[in-house]
Length: 121
Length: 121
Image 1 (tube, chains in turn blue, cyan):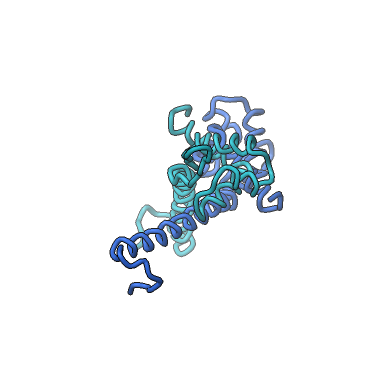
Image 2 (cartoon, rainbow over the protein chains, first blue to last red):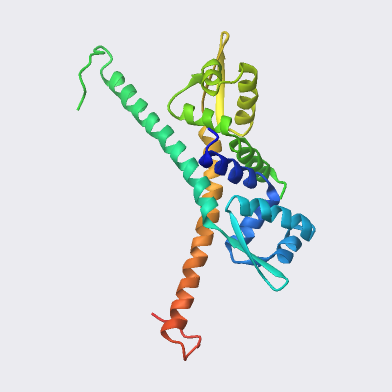
């Protein structure tokens, strides 16, 4: 399981498992912000915010650029898409299985006396 | 941020940040399995599997039932939906912002000499 894709999934879900990091993402979905603005929003130090930012950047949820002394952060859609796609695939596999199960139960319910191999139309 | 919803999000993303727990979810999307079957699949002890199962149950990703000495696990859709919904909302907020930005840039591009307040049709 420890291939590249799995390690990327580890990182993105770990990054999302923290309320402060999720608050940073929520803020950035409505537009770029500087590290100082994010620190004020969270009520934590700039140093702590930079640490969270590094985790978010490593998982491709956020990217940042420095101009002079100011670092500005914005959403990187790659991480959000990766996490959402992982979840969507598992949910649809599960739902398709339930649908098939529903079909099978429907067949045996409408034709209880004949557990034959014939398929109903 | 530390309300009930945020704590639930912490738990579900933490649960997903582990390759073995994701492998358990993947297996269960195609149907129920016993703890022993999951342990064999992962190549870990039953005790370790039970610990992972507890994390998955606390985050409503998996549920289980014991019949005699056999505990059978299946997908609980609540956790998958919660995580997917969190991601989907942030992604759509971000995409809508990009769309609005695209509209504004389109306006200034086609009408560069008149940064007026008029809206284009």
